[in-house]
Length: 339
Image (cartoon, rainbow, N blue to C red):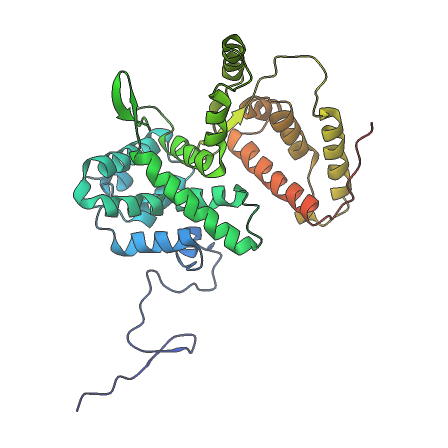
């Protein structure tokens, strides 16, 4: 007769069958901050959390661990260990580019382990995928949780496709994603977001000649679009790509920009009466106005405000979230623009 399995008692008095194991000891009464990467891996309701957890458990490939530890260790580094290293403030852009060049090159050149490398890439990009999914608008989905999950799925598909997509021209076939240029990860994630959000398709339609315009009108419109082409600027600790557009005209803005700025100032003023977690301070409001409405580069504005690019990027992102919350829940009355 087989021996009866006795439940193992968890320290917090939860009966579990079999031995209990932890990747790290349970938290004690210390001032240690919770590990955000471990927390994301435990979020089984999030697609990015499931992918990160699977990458940690099942991937037998990865960048050499010696790149992280500064040793000659050639063993593959787990996805969560690499992710912690990449998001650290003291990690240089060259180190991040080195890791992502290696991952993308292996995805392209190692067909036998391509599935593992794809999973490893998604796990390492989990933080960025979650952050971009929060910005992705899906108006056809009413449930916020479902919208967030679908956005992550769409970003993952676009992310994998962009790593392996090719472009055929008269000069031959090349990889769509050029990994020899700097800021590999930010360009990869930004391109995936553009595709998932519809920006790429919109841009393609803009460049197509319309049925009601002449060849000269088409060439003039293409020239104007190229002048307004957004420039990629490294911003923030993770060198997130920020687009800005130079304004080449002095005529009145047909979108009523003065009314938009006045509305923003009114929202900032009224948010001062809300709890601190809902307020938009004057510096953050200036960042919003000058970078998003006036088209100034974030780095230039941050320098004038005595802020680092990383701090300015974070403050602007928080201000956008609070502004969206104010407008969505109608916490403040909307001011009608003056005619």
